[in-house]
Every structure is written in structure tokens, then in C-alpha cells.
Length: 267
Image (cartoon, rainbow, N blue to C red; front, side, top):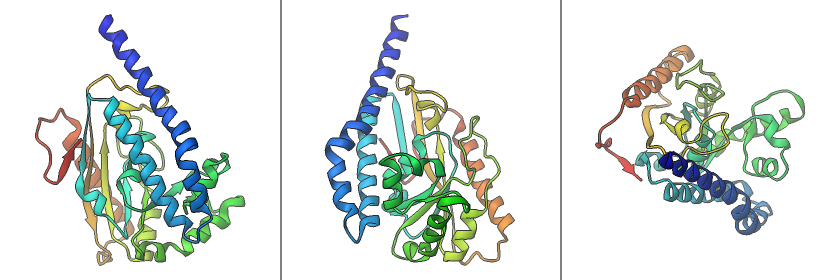
């Protein structure tokens, strides 16, 4: 009983620390930099870099406070540029984890988030675009699509969760083909990433982090599809991405030993 209570207290402490980081560190440290960046002609670039720094700080705090969580990150992810990145989706931690790992990145966001005060403003200034082609945000979606080819050519990345929503059981659901169409239009490589076990740390539908229980979070590159793979039809491309994700999920799903994959960093 004492061990259980200690674990619960650790979960509460980590949860409060994480939410405090998002509120107070942003408000009292990062907000002046965001304001200055928003006034710059290079606001999109600067805010994307600030986002990465902000989320790297968050995960540095989270790792320090959760010693029972082992993080195995493919070091090659930080070198990805000028690409469309697709990944499975298990937890709200997934998008901010990718923001912390990729040098420059934008993504597609649910339209409702653009209405959130301050947060919606940051989404617009960072160049993120809404997952809709209808309504008042349709113009923003089209505007971002028109500049996507240039953005990718300058070294930026677009990451998308083609499942569209978090998986509750870890399985790979139907994949939307939008990411593949964008990659073809922009003649950009497609990187396929696989995330494991973030939902064990921050479970969908739960408020508290489960920081006290042992866990191994893995982020790995499972495939790279080059632009010259144009002989692949969209259904074939979809199938290749799905196969890569499923191989990764099945390969890491069991209890792994102490070994780590080549090119991975244990944190």
C-alpha cells in the first residue's frame, strides 16, 4: 500500500510540474521571445525554432522527473529536413515530442485549436494549418498549401499523423492519403516514424501522467520513401507505410532486452 501511495504521489507531482511548465515557463520566460518573433519578417521560422526549444525544455524536465521512463530515440530523426514525416499516434505527447526532435516542423491541426486564445495565435504565426477545406479557416489551409513546396525546399518538415486520431489499442487504423499527395506534389521524401509506449506515460482520456511505473518509449525511423518512387500508386504507397509501421509496432511490442538499436540514443 505504501509503495502504491508513493507512486501515486509521484504521478501527481510530475503532472503538476508539467502543467506548471506549460503555464509559467511560457508566460514568464518564452512569451517575450514569441512576441518579438511575431514582429519579425521571419516570424514563421523563428516561432518554429522557439517551439522546438520550448518542447525540448519540457521533455528535459519530464525525463529528469521520471527516472523509470527509458527513452530510446533514433538519432537520425534530428537530421531529417525537406521531408514529409508520417507517424502513428498514441498520445498527446506525440506531436510535441516530434516538435522537440525535428529541426523545423509544421503540422496539420484540428480547427478547434485555432480558436484557443494565445495558442491559436501561435499556431497561425508558426505556419501550421487547419485540417479543413471548408468554413472560415479554408483560406488559411489553401494559403499554407501554396507555400508548402517552398517551405520544404528550404529545409522545413511537415509531419502528419495519417490515422487522424490517437489509437486506443496501439493498432494502425486507416491511413489518410493526404500526406502522400502532398509529398508527391512537392517532390519530397516521405519518412515513416514509429512511436511506442507514449500512451503508457500519458494515457488518452486521463489527466495524470503515469510516471511511477517502468516504461520504455521508443521513436524510430522505419522507412524512407524517395521522391523517385513515383511508380508506386497511392494505394501501394499507403500499404508500404502501413507495413513499416506495423513491423515496428510488432517488433517492439514485447518486452525488449537492454540492447538498443544502432543509431539510437538512450535517454
